[in-house]
Length: 272
Image 1 (tube, rainbow, N blue to C red):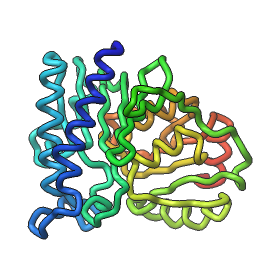
Image 2 (spheres, rainbow, N blue to C red):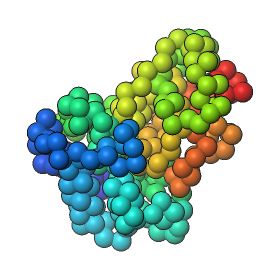
Image 3 (tube, rainbow, N blue to C red):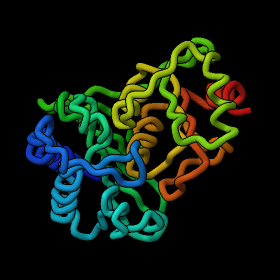
Image 4 (cartoon, one colour):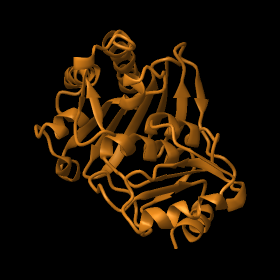
């Protein structure tokens, strides 16, 4: 992607955040919130409206690319396997942190990633309240783009021993016995949080404000942009078995760390 294209995507995310998301924040009626797969998986009219607006905008900007989003996949109108097939595909999370959005907590983001045959080429994570966008391009680094056009390079935290690491752990979707195994070992880290928002957790991790993240549920709209952001900021991520992340793979867990040695130490401390 060239500079003009990158800015056009940021402008689209900002426009949709203002017109479809923030206008509905703290303005939802009870019937505007539904449950999809379970009580931890809500969707709102804002998610659906934002996804439609983002899809229309990306179709205008990149008419040769496919666009799929979380709500389209959930409804059966699109399929995750498309990400491993030839051709460029944009994948969207119109509101990451929907549970926070519905609870009137100002901690959510908009995520978009450009994927070609399971290779993430670009990632964008927009913060509607900060009015800035974390951006990563494959092989070109990661940065935070402010509303005034200024940029700040993102860099992961320096490695530290496991007992000094802080980060976020999403264990809600872990099956047994893995769940109990990990939970009994979390005290090996200095601190653990979970913001119910991968968008902000990836931004924190890539900016060096924490060291580690662990996820079990790997839907691509939650992770494709963030994994690239983290990698381009210098980080190291692998599935629990040590294999590389691919957007079309939705199981196997994901562990992210400052570097390979830190990843190995974390895997030994938490998983093995």
